[in-house]
Amino acid sequence: MASMDVTRRTLLSRAAGLIGGGLVAEALLPRAAAAQATGKTELIVSQGGDITHLDPHLATTTTNVTVTFNLFDHLVSRHHDGKLHPSLATEWKLVNPTLWQFKLRRGVTFHNGDPLTSADVKFSIERTYDPDFKLSMVRTIFTTVDRIETPDPLVVNVYTKQPDPLLPARLAFYGGQIIPRKYYAAVGPEQFNARPIGSGPLRFVSWVKDDRLVLQASGDYWGGKPNVDRVVFRPIPETAARIAALLKGEVDIIFYLPPDHADQVARHPSTKVEDVLFAGLVVLGVNSKRTPLDNPLMKQALSLAIDRDAIVKELWHGRGIVPNGPIAKGDSHYDDTRPPLRYDPSLARQRLKEVGYKGDEVVVEAVDGHIANAKAMSEAIVSMWRDVGINGKVEMIEMSVRAQKSRQKSFKGTWWSDPASTLSDPDGMMWRLLAPGAAMDYWRDPRFDDLGATARFSVDEKFRDQAYREMTRIFLEHLPWIPVIQPIQSYGPGGAPELQPEAPPRMRRSAMMRANVVLLLAAALVVSAAAALTGEKQIVDLKEIAGTWQGWATVGTTESRVTMVIREDGSYEASSQTGSLTVGKYYLQGGKLRYRSSRSEGAATVSEEHGKTYLTVIPEGPSYETGKTEYERVK
Image 1 (cartoon, helix red, strand yellow):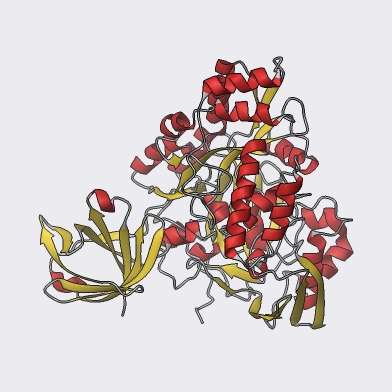
Image 2 (cartoon, rainbow, N blue to C red; image 1 turned 90 degrees about the vertical axis):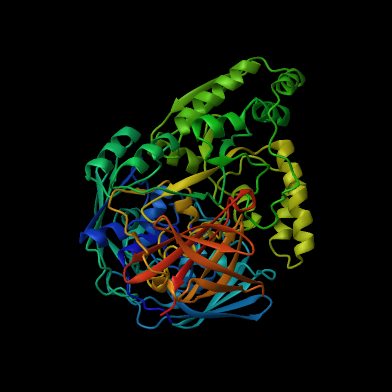
């Protein structure tokens, strides 16, 4: 099993995990690396707003989850390889079609010294859907559960209402954090939210609202003592102020960097920005219970009036794609035959006539710093709406106000949200958020509900595919939310966070982002101010790269495992897990390392990081524009 020492990179990558599992895997902030390079023992993280809750069952926004995923553990975590790995549970198995059994790690304690047992697991999961816990923001996560039994302090039996093959993955997301039953019963919900106790690598120290939250490394953490002493979260609402603090070295990480500023930060000598496609969507949520948004034709008009291509090009500098529905590109059951959402102002005006629209105000509520470009997109969309005759208005609100509106389901009209695909499956985004009682439950359709409830239990992928296609059709008719963009987000330095200390941080970057490992962080834009960890190595003799290398080849959204053997003259053979074989030769040209094979040719770079050596190969030519292979030298 992998070493369990908690490096800074691992620690600060926990929040993304699941996406949590993002968003429970082991992923939070892609940063720790910088402190490791500089010897810092305190990390300062700045987000666009302060946290609103520390109770993990109340905290589902990225701002909150980047904190709670470090305070609390899950039974299961999802790593860079997209697979589920042991966390609090060392093993699990499907005993029969409706019974999952989890065996817990021995000797784990909460931060107050209380042992973590199966009773805590049972209490934590049942609390998420307890009808008396009316504030739960994760009520729909475990609705497949029938009952939970604890035959032993280290054994948990979860019975499901019907077969649920996705249950372990659900436990690796928010809602799956385990909280201490005895402490919660002793102090009550308000005190628990104010001074939480978990079992994660960081423990709570203090919180001064709108100023700073301080967390401290847990010296007796079951996964090994973190090699960072403190993490401080500082809210800085203004984007320009956050960037200034980053470039001055006052903070180590900033979140939600707009694309135009990403270029500025990337040019700075002490920063590095890398791009990945967000495993989710940025959307306008819609309160379909309010007039005139209760009319599907009105929502269609709002959508038809949005020029998404212009938003991608002008506001995101081309860093994004136009969605074609409620399912993110890269997820299972994504329909690539469906065209992007349509921009048709003439048809929008026609829909308004059919509705009999009388000029009712349509509000867009946005938080500066919560979602990248939210203010600029709001103003652009309201302008587009006005062009077709819709009386739109932008209202900027505080993060705390947004959190309250989300809990109370009291948004005025539309608001920005960034739903993340927690399972790489429509059940983990579309159904999780739109099911009865879910966070975005402002609209109901009997057929949609029946399909969603049936598909989540089905093991027939053909049926599930048909069900999600029909749900997409219903969604696009009623538009319970309006998809705007699937953005490309930026991270640094050196790309995505390392979830496993021994895992090459450069090898599985895109796989991790697509596989809901860091969905929550994918919803955030994180840039570290510290010097990049990876130093490019100048190759002067091909013998320096001779040996065996292993890595992942990426073309579009497809990845495959590759093993390559390079000889001292630069000639090589590379074989993939699919059985294909490629032969070629590396050579030096103008002091730069290049390669040529029977399939392609292009550039190659060698870099070193924490005692490991990486080789990145980037093919050139139209058919290979998005393909590359990243290897680690095998010692």
